Image (cartoon, rainbow, N blue to C red; front, top):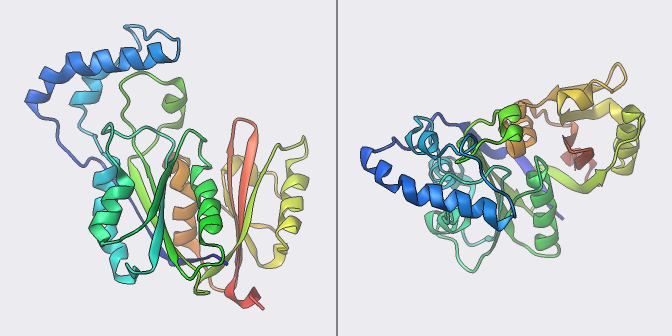
Length: 283
């Protein structure tokens, strides 16, 4: 059975992790060719108006996933027992600033881990972190091991994206240590649903699905979803610019012992939810 102690969540937003160098401008033709072929591989053409390699390479807000995660790992290292961590999952929505780098391998090397299953989950929208948490539950079921969930997002793309322009992502990273030693909140499962016209009823059904009660429950999710809840429900609206990390960052910020939590994300007509029960409800 999987557990997540909110004290084992570390997160941070970054203005930048690297400063653009003048010699990088020599690589502009290479990256311009890369992004054009990237679009061509999907049967699309990148227009000159939407190509923004110059702005991408000269941005003062460049932050790479590996750099952000590397900066956070020392904050979590005191509670990590390297011999226990055998699964490392990475979740993100935005593409990494650095092409081809392996963030999971960096974490494995920096923490001195060995014999790990390591995967990255992307292209799911903002619920990639919740989905990865459920993946960790699957990977660790029946094992006396711990796992790491890495989440990172960054704001600089080589091309204009209407979606990213609307979301305005922050450069940010979050790392969660999950355990099977009954420390923290007990993981109850993952649910993905297509909401009806009555979102309030849908959410209340999910509360019942996880065996939770509203009296000691805090719902963490997008403000739009929380607005549908009946009066008296305890809720906390996430920072939407953190994308996949948003519900985990919020949980770490507002956690109160004895309360249950329902983490939510919403995108493209789908709602994803993960339930977490207080330690007092383990019996």
